[in-house]
Length: 452
Image 1 (cartoon, rainbow, N blue to C red):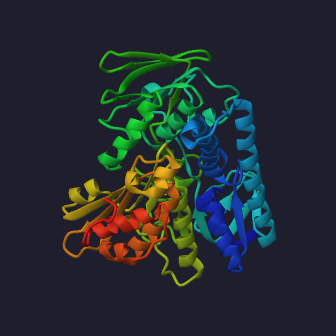
Image 2 (image 1 turned 180 degrees about the vertical axis):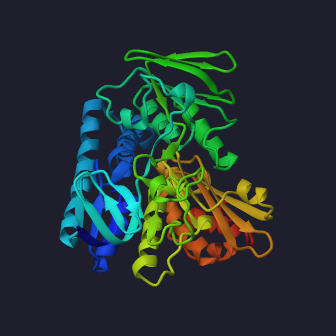
Image 3 (image 1 turned 135 degrees about the vertical axis):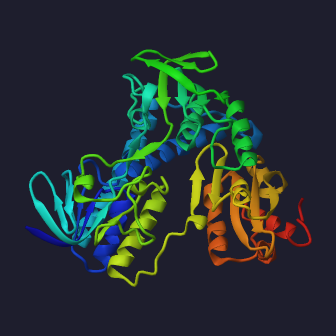
């Protein structure tokens, strides 16, 4: 029997990153991944979609060339875009595989099941380990009327060999809106069907309004407030019947109403792992109810974010082999949505804090008042700082606008540091940059913004 310090089931961000950290600490590590190292994020999610978004962003800018005093235009083929996407994914995956080899991490391309504390089984062997980390990830959710042949998931979309002329997207969450941004830029007629009153649930309504306006301007038809009651799809056509009686037709149908933890076929119930309706139950250190068995990532049901899964995995390894002080704090978790314009947040939004009964003060700085944003022709959006009313401490930031995903790093540091929102206004920021938007919003908590 093979013996290890740590065996990890799952090679996504919640699995391979803690594997690297444990190996850096001198531990003998094995990772079981039956598909591709890197998991959904690298192979069928974050990286391929953001690669496509980078291409479509350049295409969108080229369409506005005259506004920059330029002439000319870009053209594209889906085949070329897909090829670049696949090359980026392959390059990054090969890099992780090489890092594994350099650290002596054993990668086992087999399905793993939990035999109990200290024991993992595969089709060909048994692995005994001091610690086990469960990080099998999640899969697309296809309930009830959507579990029919011909329906596409995000995984299917990223394998398309050609573009449709029209596409229905059921689900106006993060995945649905990102794909709507991508395909509308490529000339596909997109319709979003969202059962809730607005797209992007969980994000403040003033933020989603900016993205809704941009999507509609790009030709996306957004239908909210009426769920789909039935769907039909085949190789050449798709249709959706809404509960209000509306019938919508398109060439293809993408269902992106969320993801569900991957719990089946791993022996969890047989081993005695405690589950709830969200996934595997863990404590604050990511420890399950079984001794020395941890869980991280989508399977815990806390977040469906690659960086959250990585942070959980690192906290678990710190609890196993370190001093155990590393924790993942829900109210400081950042998130990014790569629509046009981008959305980036840290911690709960204004509406969430209010629902908790916390009195907050919010102040804004708008892109249209930024010289840098005007020069970039990116004047839609704002930075919103959310502070506690009683002490002025910054407890939330929501950004919608160009480069929001890069700007949010400053907000992460500020919220984790527990500083007052007014202090940001006193910190000198370089000019002309988009980062000045933070300074301007912070100034509103003091004497007032300089540029309105």
